[in-house]
Image 1: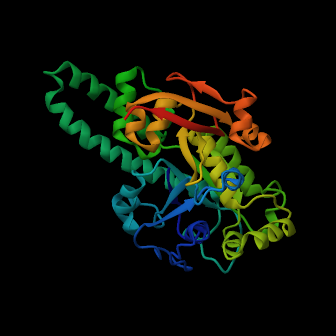
Image 2: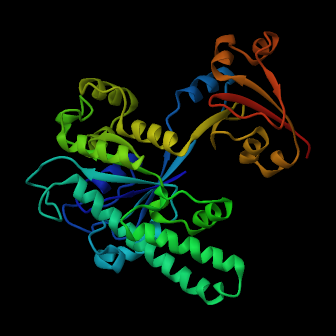
Length: 365
C-alpha cells in the first residue's frame, strides 16, 4: 500500500512524514523545503505477530508495511507549474490513497502561505489543483481519441465518456463522485488514474491541547469532518509535533507518554486504521519456526489469490488452505490442539479470506 502525503506549505506535512517514517526529511518554516518526494517504509503495528511468533518460536517477524510518499507543498497554480507543482502532481498519481494534511491550529510563529488559517479554503485550494491537473490529462487523451472517434464506434464511445468526465470536473467535482454507466466506462476511468478519483484521508493537524478530546472542541476540525462526510472521506486528528516527539521514544516510553496525554493510540495507529478501512484491506497471517508474517490483501480476496501474494506458484498450483482463526489458535496454545478440537478448517478455491486468519497453503509445484 502506498499513501501520498499532500497539503499546502507549512501545515505540518513534512513534520508528520518525519515522525511516521523517521526518515529525516527536511522540515523548515518556509515553503518548498521538500524539493523531491521523500519515500519511507513503515511497519504496520500488529500485536498478533509477537504472540504468534512466541507460540511458534519464530526466528523472524515480518510485519505488513505501508509506503509513504511526502509530496512537496502545493500552492494555488500548482497544476500550471507554480511552486514546482507539476512534477509533484505526477508523483501523486502513483499512490493508492491521498493523506491530505490540513492545518487546524493557530500559531503566529508558523506562517501560512495564504496569510490566515482556514482549513476548508486550504482543502479546496489543493482539490482545485488536482482537478485542473486531471482536466489536462483528459484533454490530451480526448485530443488523441477525437481523431478516430467518427470512424470507430469504440473510440466514439470512449470520447463520450471522456467528455462527460471532463464536464463533471469543470463543474468543480472530483472524479470519484461520478458513477460509471457500465463496465467499459469503469475500466476507462480506472485506466485514467485520475488524481481526484483516489480515496482521501484528511489529517487534521491540531495543537496538543486538542488531542485529548480528539478535536471535538476545535471548530476547524468540526468543519473538516463535515466536509469529509459529504466527500465520503475519512478524518483523523493528529498533532504532527507530538508525533515527532513520540517517534523518538521506545515502546514503553511511548505508552507512558500517550497515557499522560490521555490517548490510547498514536497518530500512526489512527492513520493505519483509517487507511485499511478506506481501502478495504485486511491482513492474514502465516507462522512457523522460520518466520511469522502479516500479508495485506483486499477484503473479499479468495484463498488462491491470497496465496499468490506469497508467490505466484502458490496461486497457480493451489490445492487447499488450512485455516485457523488467530484467537482460537492462541487460546489452544498450539496448532495441534486447535486441529484436535476441529478449529482448523480445510478451505478450497472459493474461500474468502478473513482478517486474522492463520493460514497454511497446500499447492502443487
